[in-house]
Amino acid sequence: MISGAVPGRGEPPVRGTAGLDSFIKTVSYPVGLIFLRLIFMVVIPLILSAIILGVAELGDSRRSAASASGRWRSLCSWSSVSVFIA
Picture 1: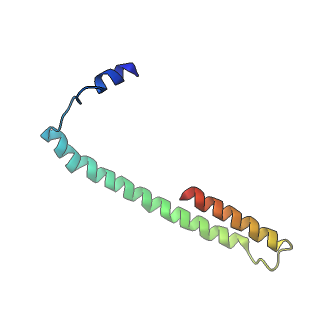
Picture 2 (picture 1 turned 90 degrees about the vertical axis):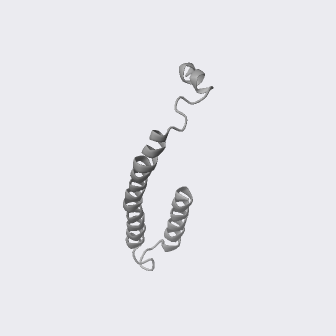
């Protein structure tokens, strides 16, 4: 850590060169955008399908013997997951 902290206290080794700026604008930024869009394209459908499957597995609450406790358990678990995601 010391070997990285000592040089890092001074000026950065590369200071705004034109080559670095053009590399960031033409390569790094578009690749980063594509990466984030691919992640969102995968994650959002997974979350949506998990919610839909969870609701489908609840079934008819009128037929279950412990429907009140099942509803509270479902509400608490859904709320905790929602808070964790947010």
